[in-house]
Length: 167
Image (cartoon, rainbow, N blue to C red; front, side, top):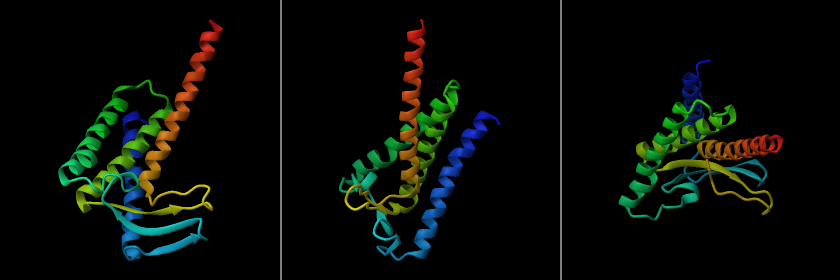
């Protein structure tokens, strides 16, 4: 498959899954409504987040919110898209990771532009051992992309280390 087509499809798939899930939640939940999926461990609660991750930045004045939650993310996402299109030597895992980050980022920026906030609805609480804030599919895409980049970075570092030992 053509590399550019692969990138485009993966980004669009990330955006589509996120947006479909948000439309479904807005249509099937009252604002603030909570539904247990797996006991108290996995819950869905519909909220609108005016800030960034976990509501950070929601108390900024409108100008700073515009800069930090719209302008800056759009510039960063644009640069990352340019980077992956131009750097053909990226390994497949890094390429997929960047596509997840771009897709998730675009999906949340789209919400901010169209709705003025981001629809969030997942919450995990594993008995206080691990607890999240309320998040969405786009947040999961970005997080998965970051984890994949870390793994790819460690793999790359190991390969370079092994190559230098062989020399």
